[in-house]
Amino acid sequence: MTIQRDDPAHDDLPRGAFVYQSLRESLRFGEFKAGQKIREVDICRRFNVSRTPVREALKLLHADGFLTAAPGGRLAVAGINLDQAEEIYEMRETVEGLAARLAARKAKTADIVELSKIIDEQMKCVGDNNKLLRANDRFHVKIYEISRNRYIMKTADLLLNSIGMIRIATSDRFSYSEESCKQHCQIFSAIERGDTQGAEDAARHHIREGRRMRIMLLMEIEAVKGQEP
Image (cartoon, rainbow, N blue to C red):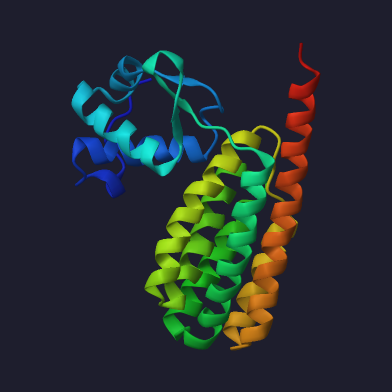
């Protein structure tokens, strides 16, 4: 399938950046599987571009950790192990908790309105995993933004890349539920009323629940691999 540049969000991007953003989104949403080989010629055909922007995009995705070097000099979709996943979630719980605490203290009326709209959209998306995931990410990114802490933003970007790797590994087994939306509502309510401790507690609980479910799935996947001849 050839991808056309018909997304307004990508209209002004150079070709390399466009390929990078599009591939990154496809990776995060599970279109590619861990271990899958990536061929430049396939990506060129997919986006109807030359090799130069594709190489630029693949280099960035490799640096982000989405791709890894495979035998023969090729790149492949990176996998992730249980220890890495545990470390990612340890860090994410701390960062998300702090971001929510700061958001509860710093949120302006416009921030609350935007968060509320994301919550409404997310509730309407229950049952559509891809749409729900996009709304989910917008919710978390908005909280990072409301924290108005540049170091949280930088750390959050790294963590979102890392979480993307966990999503790739578990994409065909994980479904976002209405319970996740309810947890977002709890975080939102605490931020709206300026409850810093409540916002941090709700955010930490939300990440711990996601951690529990993802780690269970990774354990199942590793158990299956261990039984393979």
